[in-house]
Image 1 (spheres, rainbow, N blue to C red):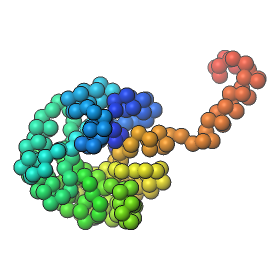
Image 2: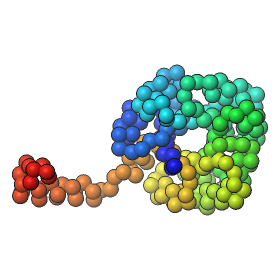
Image 3: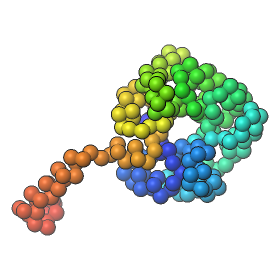
Image 4: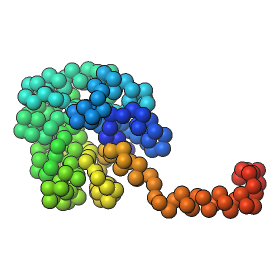
Length: 224
């Protein structure tokens, strides 16, 4: 089952988009929460009320030491939600992921910029991998190739983890990644909106309405 996430901490935006698309859950990070000006004790209950108890939330640690990450992750895992703990895919973070794997705490390796970096995180036991698509492109890398290589390595080694690409700036990037067959994706609100619209769609609908009304007035379809 494909997992579609929204990359935001704004419950109102999540509610609005969830009405029109199958939102599996929400991804956050320290910058998103800081921008929203709300902590987890306020954000998670609001998001859970919107999406229901089955929703999955990816929540990032803010500790910088390996032991701090492990301890923070253990506390996050005890919250009454389906939480995947986000850990940066740095040497310190990979060490934390290895430790958390032995404790059966689910993790997402974030801030991935290369296939080899993501592969190491998968070998350490990460359940999700979050390659940063637009950030790779900005640095001159080909994000689609990187994600393709990473997906290939995961498939070849039959590793039990999912790619959850993040950091998108346009729908071209999104479609390029989706064509690779990734298991999940997280979109900022503006990208999610753009995935649902086309400038030619509403004019076509308007013509349908005009043609119908000219012949049948205010009747509904079943009344015609």
